[in-house]
Length: 405
Length: 70
Image 1 (tube, rainbow over the protein chains, first blue to last red):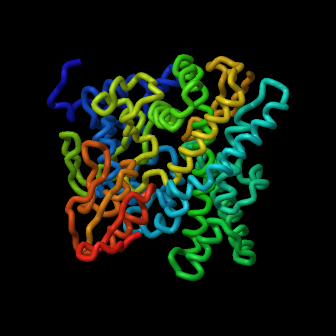
Image 2: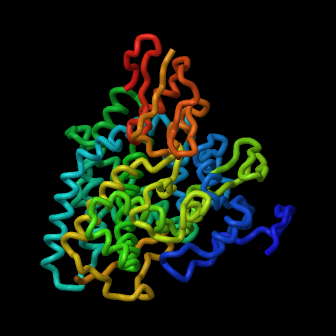
Image 3: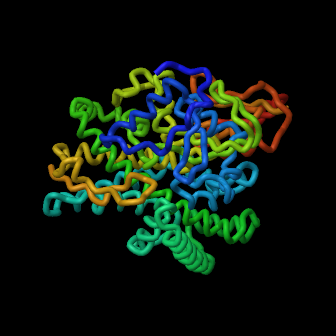
């Protein structure tokens, strides 16, 4: 198709795109748009329009530049895509409101603090794999490894009893659900989780412990740094964000590695490359169902990638497409586990850059290290076409991943 | 006056650019850098120090060299 200078008058493209035929490649529409017009108007299912941003530099600007607001995107009149639960959380705030809450939790997730947790995580990986080895094969990796690992880690960090996992996991699934599918169910789940956290907070007030929830309670009760509602929302947000994402990345990382046996074989012989491999897999693997980051709304007129966006425009950074931008990555469609320069946007960017990014990196490194070392011949026992994803989720969330070795 | 530094631990998250716009920018190397060597004390820069996921930002007193943050 010829490049048209009058592109804004083109018929807007319908988004989200039809799902790709492969689990490992983005829908081809992303690359076509990125090459032709990295900032493009699209029509959403509710009939509203938004600007889809598929270039790396442009998508990063949307996430970093304060003229693109999450708060303005959380209002009732803006398009709702996927994770509506985010709107009533710290993810729906702008600085300085956002900064006040983020500062309360940021120190618990720095690279330095996360390194202190590494030996504990490595031990959890070993214990889970000890048990996996005793189970009849095929073993469901979701139930026995990729989910319990991050659940245990975030529960210990927050001070939530991991034995309550079966209680909160169904609610967590409902919260992560696409709210267009069943808004009442998602709302009910948030309320259930809020009540759960209110009880937990009451218990911790009575009996403080050395954990993040106790520290946040002190920030409220001693220093009045946040409201009771914010305390509850922050706690449940950390719990949910802290395990669903990592669990799914462990599954998708393994599936992706098994598809690239040469790269996998090389990684086995050079385990020092595991941190780089995790970065490359973060770039390459699609975590979200829609391929997008969180929607922003412009607070004023902004020029983005040569396109003049009016104030009040809905803008969606397509992280998946940005992570395959040839202007930012050499041979972007190639999985290169030793890629050195890797400014991927898998954890987002700007003030909402994933709070748990360092923790997720470390957990993914240890999970991968454990799987490679303990289950060297690991393989999935069903073809991709038989893998079942939970329906209506904003993340690509596997029901099960049967493996043998 | 303060002297602000971003050290080699920077991962280019852009957190500081969003928290303290006008004080930091991402360079072509995808790392953050302060926009000027010496700046007037500003609460937003303390926020940037506290928000950095890899604790790569430090502030010192420009005259004495004494650390201000962290």
